[in-house]
Length: 91
Image (cartoon, rainbow, N blue to C red; front, side, top):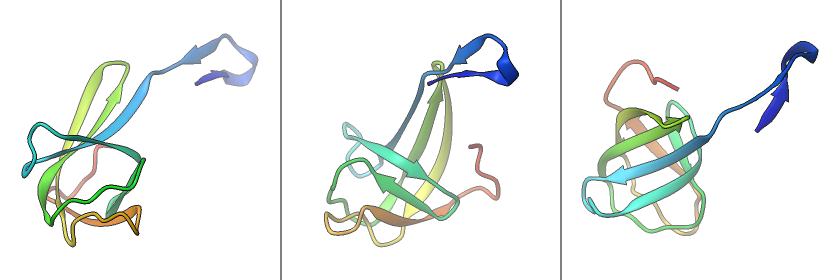
């Protein structure tokens, strides 16, 4: 993404968003959106209810938040209900 701030020099940031699942430690699920009480998968995916980490990477710096997938993820719904283990979400 490039944007000129108030007519100034354009700047860019490399941003990435994914879910790391405790039940499948070798699996990374790309996300298209994350909020305080939900995540949305980039592509349909099936996962059981369980805990994991939502990770946001901004220019290589990672911000991790522990979450619980209340009903798991399924291919019919891209949005998935989550509960954050912290009171504040860092993104």
